[in-house]
Image (cartoon, rainbow, N blue to C red):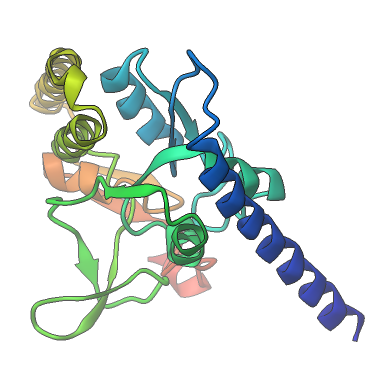
Amino acid sequence: MKKQLKNKCTFLLLSTCLLLAACTGNSSKSNDKEGEKPVITVTLEPQRYFTEAIAGDKFKVVSMVPKGSSPETYDPVPQQLVSLGDSKAYFRIGYIGFEQTWMDRLMNNTPHIQMFDTSKGVDLILSNEDPGHGHTSHDGHIHSIEPHIWNSATNALIIAGNTYKALCTLDKANQAYYFARYDSLCQRIQYTDSIICEQLSKPEAAKAFMIYHPALSYFARDYGLHQISIEEGGKEPSPAHLKD
């Protein structure tokens, strides 16, 4: 009984915060402080890096999932829900657990915010396991999606391109400024990719690696590596899996 009451109270608190976020957002459009940078909210810290690299000093960028927290299970605190109403746009990463749980609620309660999907165009890795990231493919079957798309040089270029396009949509007057910074970021990504390729081309370079949570699937695909995951289907490994 106490648990049910606690859950109801939590739901009411979050609903109130989302309502306040919507009201705050509507009023902020007419009461912006002169000289204050417009805000873009992103889901993850890696996205904040990409967005800040291209946006420069034109926008303030904040991430919903703080550094050190799991983007699979994180729940925003009430203050974040209220502050979201001050954002001009939201950049999502695609299919991570936080977005699967919260995105519809966040957008429904802050309808003035423009939403951009920075995963658009990424060649997604699908599997038949079900860790909670459902996606219906062209064959009509529901597959799970490996959501850690940012851990790949190939995908990083796509994310950067989507971020650049979104910024130009929000602020066309500074398109040349964003392009110069976007081009510089792409050069950094390509240089990093060339270093990795050089290291992995050496005869002594390993072709497989072990990891607890399979967050480097796209990285492994980029460079022809075999990722050995200790975790099994998003759960603690079974004795048989550990033996394998």
